[in-house]
Image (cartoon, rainbow, N blue to C red; front, side, top):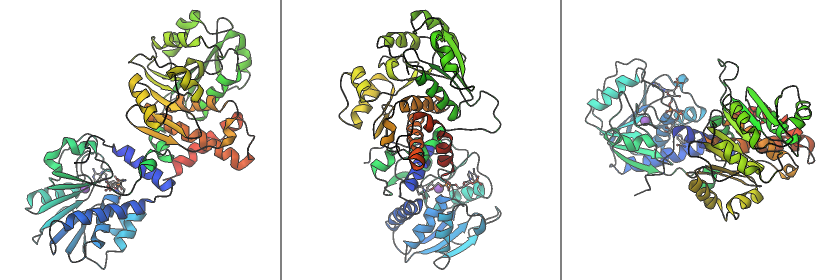
Length: 480
Ligand SMILES: NC(=O)C1=CN([C@@H]2O[C@H](COP(=O)(O)OP(=O)(O)OC[C@H]3O[C@@H](n4cnc5c(N)ncnc54)[C@H](OP(=O)(O)O)[C@@H]3O)[C@@H](O)[C@H]2O)[C@H](O)CC1
Ligand SMILES: [K+]
């Protein structure tokens, strides 16, 4: 029996679909594999059966359209719950076109559907992971009809009406079998009374591709609401600077370019004017003294209360700072991004923390460098933190899942790119979970570097990258 424990949320599945498309495995190929797998299972229920397919207007329906092509010899009728012109996606449209000469098709426009024929098998391909809220007509009538028939019911991916993540439902198709794709949806495991026997079909997504960050991560982690008020898109506090002045400013500007509404810098007052001089966009608070010390902790904690995320460490240059970092983490902070000298593995349980070490810092903190991705995952799990290990191939893990990022190029070894990355993470972490905030940020940072390379070749600077962050986000959001 497959390992039922590793499930995937519908939003994560959607992100992986997008990334597959971006990295060369098209949704059309995935749909073909899904539909073929569906047909393989239906064929096991006996040949020459009369089949009625209820199909929706999205890719759940698309899977069934593909299956029709793989079910030669079966007597198939399709009830399309809408008009052909309303089919939403190009790949579902293409597969619908291909079956118009293969089976009977009836467009169902209003809910007074009747079954004037007996069918051995009914396939529920109405709604899958795209379901939102209560079922609209004619879907709810179709569900009642299916449930009142005595046909054998096969649900595609998720029984229509079931919330794929929570397992909740108002009304729902009661399936004898659910054929689900790639990974189990959490809701299926909580609703066996409606999902029936769950069969998992592989659709050809290799493990490395499931882990590989892409625009799908940005779709998940970057949120923008057009009805938002100032500050709602995130308030980031950057605590850093001392020996260096540029690093905290780069992190702050990166956070602003990544969608944060308010970014406050808290730096030693000795460099306050220098840092403030970098840009009129910066709000800079001077902390007493020329280096951040115990005496500043109270003031920093007061500032933390007014922000969503604390980003700390860049430009401090004081190896003893880790003790101060650990003291600050015991205060009001609930979400923290730790970089450079602030990185510690000892984080209070009530703090959601992302650390962004390079290999040298990883070794300093954990005593050795990780052999592989799984070791990064085990370190993250052991300490209850999310690790973004920066390298040519960034490795991200929250102790449960692993993500990998390969965007970027060797021009990014220039100083300051780590500060930029930490600022991006801080902005996305205001409203997304640690794993996807970190992986989306790694992808954005690398893509900004790639856009710089496209324009300048190598020898661009971290400052050049700042201006490409909005473009990297725009490209990612627009990639569907
Ligand atoms: N990697 C994979 O697992 C793959 C899965 N595939 C299949 O794709 C579906 C998800 O397809 P999607 O197009 O995202 O959405 P659905 O087909 O589930 O829904 C279609 C539309 O239905 C509308 N909708 C949503 N909620 C309701 C509701 N409560 N009542 C009525 N209608 C509803 C909604 O349209 P709007 O009009 O609301 O915009 C949906 O867009 C997945 O389940 C798999 O079967 C891929 O084929 C291959 C890869
Ligand atoms: K379904």
